[in-house]
Length: 394
Ligand code: ADP
Image (cartoon, rainbow, N blue to C red):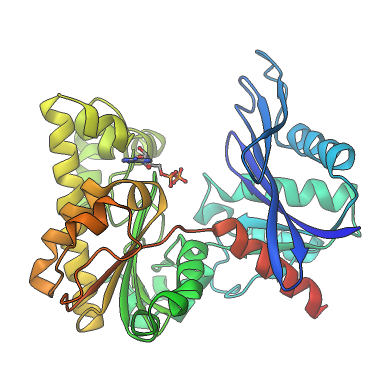
C-alpha cells in the first residue's frame, strides 16, 4: 500500500483537490480534480496525473450541494477509486495565519478556533478554507490535518515593510501588511537553487500573475516585501480586483455615491481590474485576442502597474539579480512577459526574444545583467510537502 497526502483548496464555490503519493523522498501527483459550482450547478471531475479522466459527475441544477457534501463526495471517491492508498494526512490551503502562524500547523479543535479568529481579516476566503477542516475533524478525528497559510512566508518581512502610516496602536492590533500568495513564492524559492544559485542567494523579484496577481521581493530566498497588503486586493491590478487604490476614492464613493461596505467590496474585488477597465473580460487570453480599444487599455494598465511595482520592489532590494514569472499569465503569455521585461530594461534586463517565445525557462540573453526566468508554480506540492513534514514531526 502507498502512503498518500491529500491537498484541499476550498474556495467560495469550489473545492480543488489533489493526491500525492510517496515515492522514495519524492511526492508524486496521482490524482487531481475539483468540485465546482457549489450551491448552483455542482460538477465533479477527477483526472490522473497524465490528464486522463478518472471520474466525473454532474448534479444538474442542484443547489443543495455545499462544502460538506462536496467533501463527503471526495472521501467516497478516494475510498472507491484510491486504489489502495492509505491517507497519511490532509493539507489545506488557508489564506490567513495572522501573526501567530508563521509556519504550517497541525490542526485540532483548538487550532481551528484560533484560525476562526482570522475570518474578519479574510471574510471572502477564510470561512471556506476552514469548512473542510471542520468537517474532517468531525468525520475522521484521527486523520492528521495540516493548515498551510498564504501569509506565512511573508512573516520574514521587516516591521517597516509591514507598516501603514496609521496610528501605531492599529499596527499592534494587527492592521498591517500581511502579504499573500506565500505558498507560491515559497515553492519558487525552493526550486530557485537548481535553476540559478545567484537568483537563489541574491535579490530576486517573483511575479505571480494569475487571476489574482502579486509580486514578491526575495533576498536569499526569504520574502522581504510584497505588493499585497492587509488584504489580497492591494498591489497589482488583477482580473477583477483594483489593486492599490487611493483610500480617498472609497470615501468619495461612500459620501457622494451612497455606497456601503458590501457595494464597495463588490466593486473592488469583483467588478474592477482587467474586467472593469476593459468592459470585456477578466481573462487575459480573451483580452489579448480582443479588437476592443478598451481591452488594449486594460492590458496597458496591467503592464504599467507591474512596471511601477517592479521599480518599487527593486528599490527595496537595492538592485535586482533576477526576475521570475509564474502562474497562469506569467507562465503562458510570452507577450506580457516581453512587455514586462522590456519595461525593466533600465534595470539591466536584456530579453532574449526567441527564448521568451519558446517558453524559457531562461528569458534573457547571456549578457543580461538581470536574469529572467519563467518557472511553473506548484502550490499543491508545497502544501503536500509541508503536510508530510508536519505529520512526521508529531
Ligand atoms: P488562478 O489565480 O485562478 O489560479 P491562473 O494562475 O490559472 O489563475 O491564471 C489565470 C489567468 O492566466 C487568466 O487571466 C488566463 O487568461 C491567463 N492565461 C492562461 N493561459 C494564457 C495564455 N496562453 N496567454 C495569456 N494568458 C493566459
